[in-house]
Length: 124
Image (cartoon, rainbow, N blue to C red; front, side):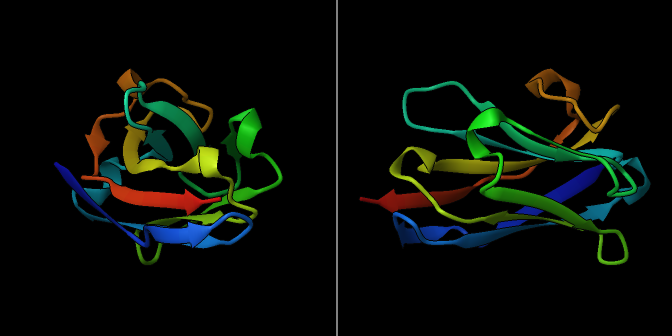
């Protein structure tokens, strides 16, 4: 099993920045590709960004390209999501996920492990 713990969420004004962190523990050799998803109230969980096991390959949903950056520190077994130029529509609970087979895995069902989520609120 892999345990994932997110941190870094909060309240920020539009145009501001936040950095989310996700620390993995347990059978970390099973983390494989990791990703970030988000879920706004009343909406389905959606893919945001993902990164390969080595950290070389990254994939983003179009709506965050150029604003968000996913990165990974394998020594710390931690994945990050740097979010810049935040917009009110980025408001959601952000979830870290791990265990996907490929760096461009965008479906919820492709990930085996999930964190508890961290809330991001962007005010206008």
